[in-house]
Length: 410
Image (cartoon, rainbow, N blue to C red; front, side, top):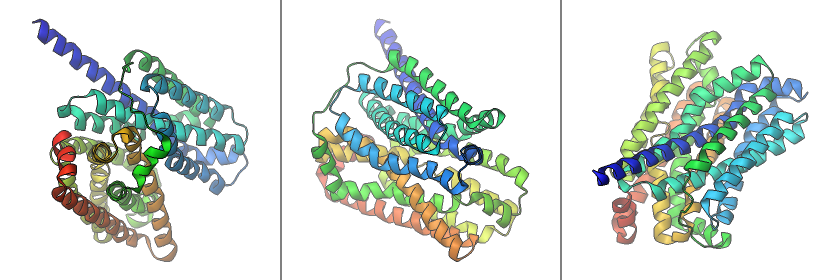
């Protein structure tokens, strides 16, 4: 009885911790993505062009991609509990400054600070999940933590946009600051206080990026996400001009897209639990087929919508597998850099978003919307090729094969 009660208590603590880490990614995701729905209000209020307001999005992504691995490499030598509380506090301050901003310059600075802090928080959260969860649950919990971003897109962004349109855009950042305060209050009591710390200098950890295996694995999610965002960046004109859907229905369809993407996170946990990297080889081929299908289905409203919803189902299926794979490769080549490795998946995703948007912009400028489909599919095929190479190398190298598959359940 006593042993059973102790086990139930442990399971409860793990569930509460998983919820807390998911809440953190939800809050970070809402803060990152909500600006998309407020660009018109921001540009009008600050008297800047819409293109200039758009740099609040690209600037966030660039700061995230560059600042996250550098700062994570530096702070990973310190205890995780106080780090989490410190960076959540800085996140709150960053959102308060955004809410008080009366100029573009102050707003972009606050967004850059928020981006880097968010990236480090997510990296530490992934590391905590890996350190505290039993092997059988790691994949599903990491997929759940990633799902916070999806929930942010489905619930947080529409709610934040509604608040900003109901009052003003500054009110939205007061809302995200409040979410940060709630996360801080819960984290104080839930985050474990004594977690393992690996001592290594930032310079030593950054050497991990010179390892060919890590670089190869890093670009798998980059091209997978680029494939989706080549199309998704221009989803509104595709729906309106390609599928002939009235503007008044666009928000409903995007909400449905977000709902379907939740299923993607469920699949991610299942894929990661059973030899995930081997399955991704074929998952990306399926993604390429779905993206390419839009070339043929764009002439039909129903068929086109089916292609787009299937695209949503595929968008996050690789997250948990890649997150665990990068951390396990780091455990083989440089164990002290595991926390640093945990920051690489979100960084790769942000680079993939920028790459996809750039490719999509080139296609739209030089061809028509329908050609976005096969360009996106080609990116997914590149991701599949990289996954094939990684899997074959794992098969040949026993020193990588054991940790990558036996240790993590992949």
